[in-house]
Image (cartoon, rainbow, N blue to C red; front, side, top):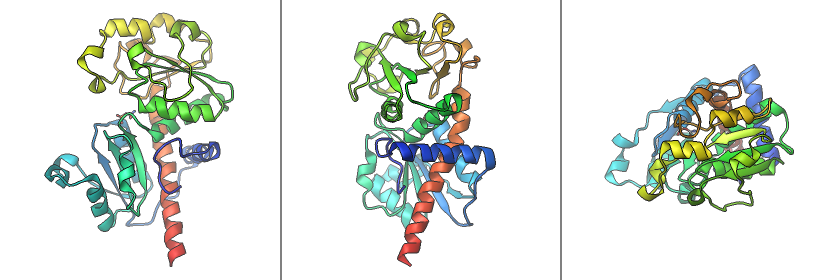
Length: 300
Ligand code: CP
């Protein structure tokens, strides 16, 4: 693939190819790139998992990582995203990982000749999060067809919900949303359900972070009210079937989306998701850089 921007761009086969590659890397390691291949990670929004796990993936693949901090860059002098990226391309960077608060920021980067991996765009898409979620579910069940997957929480503001609903539906899973009225958004055909009506039958219970930074002050709940109405309480956890798993993209608001004692419970795969994130990102970087190398060879 040339870039990794959205899950919508990927076919079922593309997704499974990346998952298989990530599983192979997890079991057998990966080929590293030759000396001098360089990447830069541009994070215009805060991140711990995505930024650090991309950097871990890059280092494991033998790539040089150009240190780039928005706060000390010429972005502060008003340089545009396109000019910033074009500058990094000009000085020899081979690929960019970008997280930005603007939905579809990548539409402004059509003139770039190096691959872009989307680390999250506003409330738009978060493809590597979706791929690591899919890998974690696949490790558990080995299939997607007919799996009942509940995604509960701040659907409207969640790029994770958007990417996962799209991809998991494509893979044959039965995706359901649960959300307060003001955080519902009909960006797909996924039905809305009440969490208590389905908790006993779901195979995957995925909680979403309440994105306070994207809300008006009028749309917030008390932590306790939200937890009791939409969160994974101990009572709901006890109703999950024996093989059901609990997921959350994190960071977790403990005691809000999920009871703090459940974050590391036996059904929780929250830290497994983060572990898998490194292998998924290694697989994606391999794919875009190999595509780029092939293109360069074709032009020789
Ligand atoms: N899940 C996720 O994207 O976490 P970060 O915001 O810490 O990268």
